[in-house]
Length: 193
Image 1 (cartoon, rainbow, N blue to C red):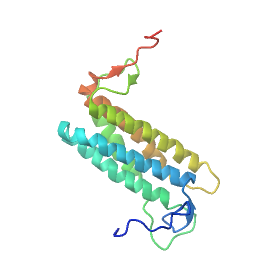
Image 2 (cartoon, one colour):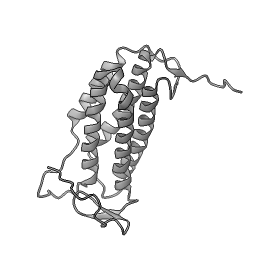
Image 3 (cartoon, one colour):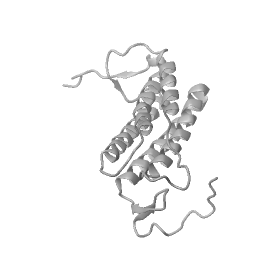
């Protein structure tokens, strides 16, 4: 159980933060950047849900599940796998979370016409917000993959898969709320030459 009754601790005044293991790292550390960007993705989803909740309850429920998953992902990333079994079982992303996300992508995508052009971010307010979430999640993915490539930094395969599928989900969801793709803003190559 999490209990937060004191928000400031002053322990980060020296430019460090504590990981889930208690280890302190610089606030600009790649691992901290990665889970911080996951948190940023989550915040953008909160904004997208403001308009989505009134438009499509089923999609809003999917986004709520994703927001919870993103806290799981942050917990996974802030507790490095050192290869030594800890005294407690750290929260890790699971393949079942990836599988559920894939099913939901397929469910939304089944109602969409095939694309014949790239889509510009926009359309409805919800679609625009989902596109913003998509781009932030892509940045999170790049940071997580970069972290996984560092010597001594282990990132579980389900975590990497999940964040990769997330941007796919958000793209499909943006098209879904754009009148099932009919309201997409399409790129016209060279239009303004």
